[in-house]
Length: 289
Image (cartoon, rainbow, N blue to C red; front, top):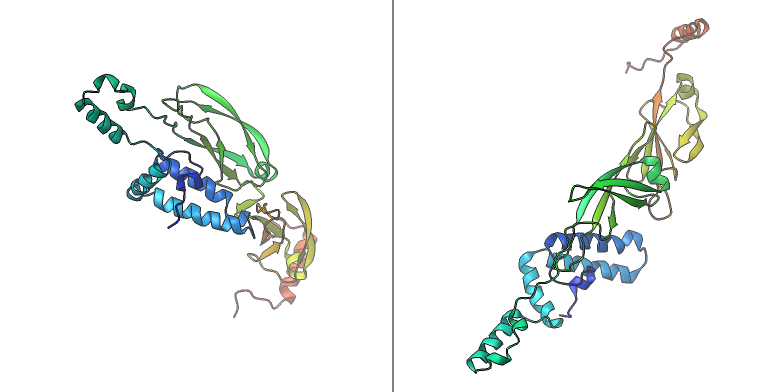
């Protein structure tokens, strides 16, 4: 079987990483080479297969240990026990004065600091258009630190932004961990976000619903005109294509309008008379068979 450097595929430089660090690296690599973001790219398709294979192997401690033996040999990583054994052998031969004690001393490997994860709320409009947002977080030492976070337009709900080196400090000269900021997009009073679609209410008068009409409806970036067919009912939905949220591929989802037929609470005298006449002349009974 052809040897593959699983750590390199996941963007890792060493095998001395935790399972959590492997999971984090896998999510970033899988996102980068996801088929939806690399349509028609055969190299990306092969790369995502290798990335999945690497994750399946390294995310299980037993298979990781087995693979690490191969990885260490391929990368000429010295085995401490072998060095120690050779030096003991030299001692028995009387070469004590020639022993390089630095070789038998267990070297301290650099350890990367832990990653830190937090969550911030972003309005639907800000997520749609993108913005640079300043956030203040309390550090491990208890001090407040301000970060400038660039939120790209069309970011998905639940997506994470990575700030490299802003996590916990490393030890033995290791790199700092990273800060991951999860985005929580807040719905507003007009729109609700479902994937790439936006949902809104479309309020109609009884006569608009009965006769059919054209109405203006608000979108997240303006306004559009919608045709309402004759006899539409409350609870029906009208789909307006390409007026929803950004889909990450240069397009947009749909705007889904939920029809709600509204009846006036207070009628003028002539309005009441018209409704009375309609009541007398109409045979329509929504409760009948």
